[in-house]
Image (cartoon, rainbow, N blue to C red):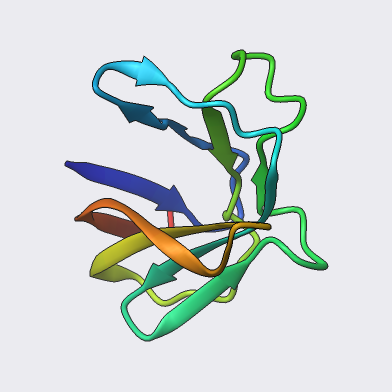
Length: 103
């Protein structure tokens, strides 16, 4: 799977978090991170992530990282989610490629 981040653009990455094809309830999430190569995007104190009012329903996380300080390129990436029962985070699914472009 490949996802794109366009620098200085409003494009979003929309991910559906599923287990056995069932969308997961994200109401208990406390934090999210997207590891892009050696850069970590944090939900705390930023507007990069939304899982509470996405307009797409439960189980969906929207990542809006066009304003992040990233360098163009192809990166191995991982989504990590946190809740009260998993304070050290859960790596969600397999890693995927994030392609950062400046158009």
